[in-house]
Length: 455
Image 1 (cartoon, one colour):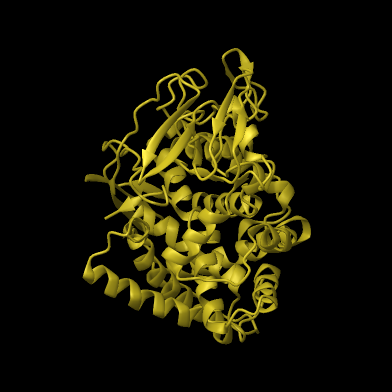
Image 2 (tube, rainbow, N blue to C red):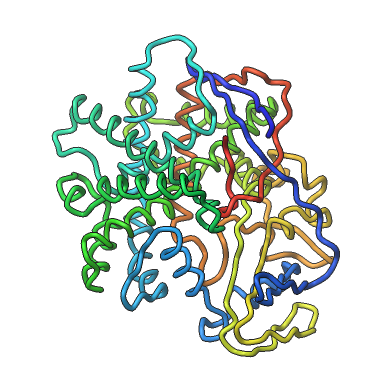
């Protein structure tokens, strides 16, 4: 266990503890086959060949079994006739275009409610707080209010205070479950852990029950569409509540930790922090009104932050470690980019782990373990998209959001939310690390969600 530095924001100081394990660089090979729990797992290591997997028809390579495992084993969700493809097609329109803008606008409002409201209530001066708790808490609370609704109108100081109290209750309850998810996924809960998980889940099911949510205002179209989808499948209200807890984890569980790493890298790299602050100052100078009167951050403003975009891409490259897994439904010959083929057997599992390659590949990224805030910027300030391996340009040079049929539908919402959070934090608060000389802790791959173990 490593003791990390602390930070302070305009009055709030931030401390954190992380336990992390650094992965070894992979040997130069295209695939590797391992035996796990009696099952053959083929690990594909060549990023040039990833498209052959992520766009393979579901009739040959399928994510369905793993999705069902997550639902049933971890969240106690059983949906009749569950079809992830059908669910995805119904939910996708609620996260794009005008619906994305509606989510982005609501998220900015709710971030201001919880972030600025909590700090006003805390009073002036410096306050100490864990950096992960700070990032994770405020983003999940605002995200919950954005998707699941706020107190009934009118939008008053009293209703905002109620939103802060209620969202804090949801976050702290959810966080208890989140900390036990790695053990739950591995099936290694102690008797005491099982008792705690049962109580926490029961509390979350009550907080997110459809009956309780029915009275909330400004519910997202995403929530309305998802509840309608569950009702059309004939899902009971009790099971709907469980599914809504699963969706809280799926939609909100990564943004806070991602923002934590981004802020940490900035606080440890003064040049990067100065570059981002300079960019945000330029944004404010071009704004039509002072920040205190800004009720939204328009998409064109969010899209005009190339330095912050590069910082986010670099922090995700260093810390985002999704397993992209597929069940082999039928015997097939998997084509590689170099012309070779690998035979896969029905019933086996295929795994991509882009954290090792491309994201940590020294042939693709110079000094891959080092944070470089401008790594994804061209000299003219535009986004850099040209990265090479074996002399060939890579299409998939970083995959924090997954790829192909199962790419994250909420990427746009997540990116906008993280950027709005960083914008508010850096323009409204002063942040300082209490122990600035402590090294950045290594990243932990032992978590089942491949995020972060915090103790």
